[in-house]
Amino acid sequence: MQPIQTAFFSGTFNPVHTGHLILASYLCEYEGFDEVWISVTPQNPLREKLSPEADRQRIEMLRLAVTGNPKIVVTDAEFSLPLPSYTIRTLDHLRSRYPDREFTLVIGADNWLLFDRWYESRRIVDEYHVCIYPRRGYEIDETKLPPTVRYCRAPLIEISSTQVRAGIAAGKNMNYFVPQSVYNYIIKHGLYKNNE
Image (tube, rainbow, N blue to C red):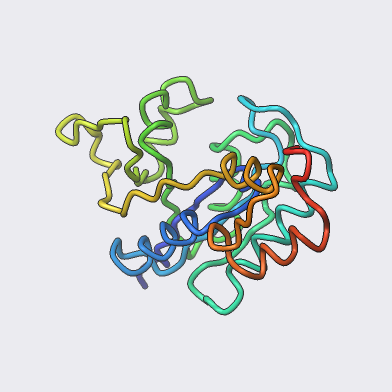
């Protein structure tokens, strides 16, 4: 029986925006994945830790964003693992819990260019697959990629969570930058008014 091809897409998602969802949809429709599992990272070793309340809100917004798409699944697996969150630990955890799935790590070209600084990056490449999506200003030489790593042609979407937070803090209408359900949640809970 063929393993279920599962893309693992982890990030801060503060908040999730339409660019994230377009990428997840592209991976399912054009890159051969059966499902994309999206995970909020509770503590990226390279970023400041957010509050438990902010963590819960980011997961809730992700769940709202993917409602109705059975191919895109939100997982909170990283919240049951030790902090800070190291990708190799998460992938090992998922592989042990879901042996019927083959997991591929999804990262941006910007992260690939500093991938050798990731914790146990060599083991990720040796034991898992990696799918790199394009980011403007970060060129990837596909001829130098290891056999387990591939570059995908996902559309470049120039939206960032930082831009969304700044726009909301400035009083701008950002409802087309995030799914409507997520925008409603942000407004209802008064999030990002001070660009936190």
